[in-house]
Length: 337
Image (cartoon, rainbow, N blue to C red):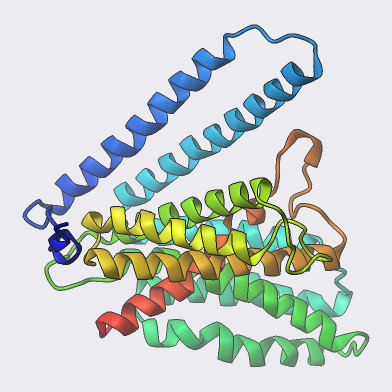
């Protein structure tokens, strides 16, 4: 068997970035269109009133809901690329604001936390994204873990409220880490520039989202079909190491198949996808633990009966996968930005 393709260079390297991105969106929206047509035709079948038919109808409704979200996400991704790096940075800044707001609304805050929350929403968040858009990646990498970590408790202490001080500040800082710091690495991928790969950062973001989504789908399918051996039963009955390995390996294979849209060779793409999807999956388990602690099933305020969930439920995995992927790429390829 000829394995030369594993070390072959990007076959689209001679194409311009606009041509490559154009091909990406043609494929992406083409797949969504075909899937929508198939879902529509499948929905034309008559559904009976027996339990099996009702269950099938409920699955179709949930799939249609997920498909609409896929259309919205793909359209946002396209608009982010059209708007350029600055527009994408602003877009993700808005998503961070909404996600952090969703997170904070479920916490038991006190009057003494108001100053800390104002600092988080109106100073730390915009400053983090300003550093992202300005390519100040050294300060961008330490603003939240170092300076925010020190500033938030100082502001809280000045408010003069010692009740549950450590718990309150830990929850606020954790929300900033996930919703602001983690998510801000997604638009930062758009700004990474490789030699010979200039102007194509959108592919890195698409690659990350695609492999993480593939890994999550494979893990969810495996957890439902395989015999469950929950690793942390009190947190999630669906999470098992067998399902985690299946999801991470599926993401690795998807990354190898998508290597042609990245500056990576196939083995590099497979490893990067495996690492990103694995980190994202563990991040999802962490968010499950936080939800258990908060006593909620979903981060949003929408009813779980309809299958709708909040924004943070949708992007939580990406918030953990993006920083691991970003810094792995920078470290491995020694990108001096």
